[in-house]
Image (cartoon, rainbow, N blue to C red):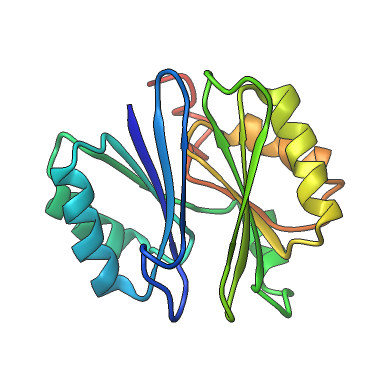
Length: 188
């Protein structure tokens, strides 16, 4: 499976701000783009390259996400990060968005893999994990690194996201590209 998580980061390109982590069953790409137009152009290339699942950071609202879905077509699943009401309220009090934490689940990960992407505007720490036990430890690790907020890949539904919020002692906002509507959990 080919998976990408795209972040909107001023002043970067996928060539200058990206990391790839491969496992037995997955090719995982995390990349930054500068703005929504750059994102649309980049995801079109990813779709051509066979990416099946694309997660977008919280800067991508529903309207832009819908436009990106249209660009990539029905064969590519696209989900944007969102926050529960409580986590969104915590976002309103952030003074900085420079230190960004990201947790991505891949069942073929042996031990957690950490990568750091750096630019003037944003330092992103990505941790790839295989299960909730590793994800909780990754959340704690991101808190130790003093991230301002954390976003999770689409594997993290409402219950899994709440588990990460608890594991991080409710210290930073946590959003997810996964399902937040409790009525839809388990529908996949």
